[in-house]
Length: 162
Image (cartoon, rainbow, N blue to C red; front, side, top):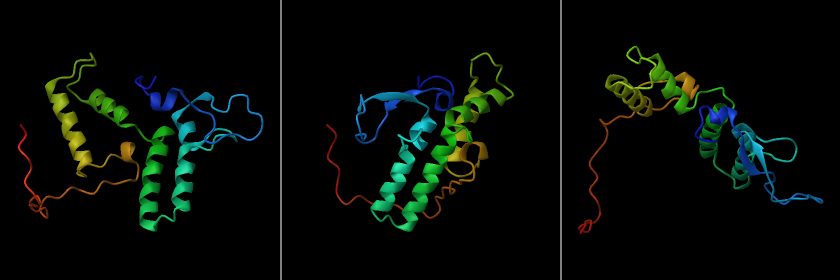
């Protein structure tokens, strides 16, 4: 199921119904149920709270510092928005980039120029030179800078790989 097109939005996956043993006489406390990725992450009904609320509760219970909590919230929101279909998944973004390329003939054959442009676009996004709101929403990747990088020698010699 996971390998199907747009599975992150449309497919259902077997996932455990309860995160903890349920109260009462549940006939199958370890049972699974089919859920969308959004339901797995955000919750389903009054019996399954979802993984994101569980992570947020954990961060609160351990007294997470504000900076880490803010960073985690941003990542969780990005994941939630992708699961909800509000943002494209990386696979959707790449498919759209290929489909819109002027050299692609919609014949499932990716010309070298299209592949090169795709790789360049992926690198530019990853290194912060290209912002893609459909993929990242309001999140921005800080541009990778090499002008302040420096050589850091290893503290010890590596053994010979023989």
